[in-house]
Amino acid sequence: MAHGALRGLSLLVLSSLLACALRPASDVSGPFTLAEAAEQAPEGPRRASLYLVVQASESFEMGDLAAARAAASRALRVDGRNPYAYFVLGQVTAASGEFDTALRYLEQAQLLFSLDATIHPHWIARVLRVEAQLRSEAGEVEEAALLRRQADVIESGSSRPGGVLSPEIERQP
Image 1: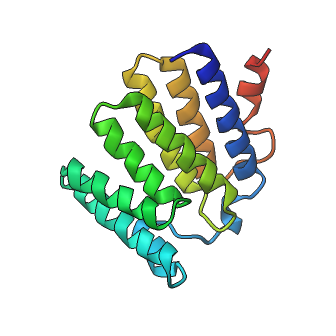
Image 2: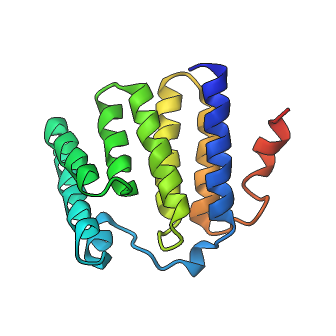
């Protein structure tokens, strides 16, 4: 990946983590699973889109990547700002060997998750873990380790302004 693109991704990660760090996990009672997200969504396009994501996730877990991609893509046609759909598409494209496409979907998922104060921060941690796995497989060991540490902090609920961001900010020029 080009240095400029990696730097842009680092800034996106930082802004997402800052948003997450400013709202403690204990203050968020948002959905913890895809099924909960679908059940809690208001009637209409958002709920329909989330049920398609549940279907996509089930297909993905059964190894049917084509069905998973189709359902997640349909979910985005129904609601183009559905972070769960981007997350599942990131997983599907990663499993299909489409590294750059997977990263773009995961970046979009992370951004949309971080913008919604009703979403449980563990979703950002899940995105970071998938991205860490991709980066590890691509030989980007340091970046993968940083993403895993950031996910650990988010999941521990101990994130606070500066707590997650300090190591990355210190490395910025």
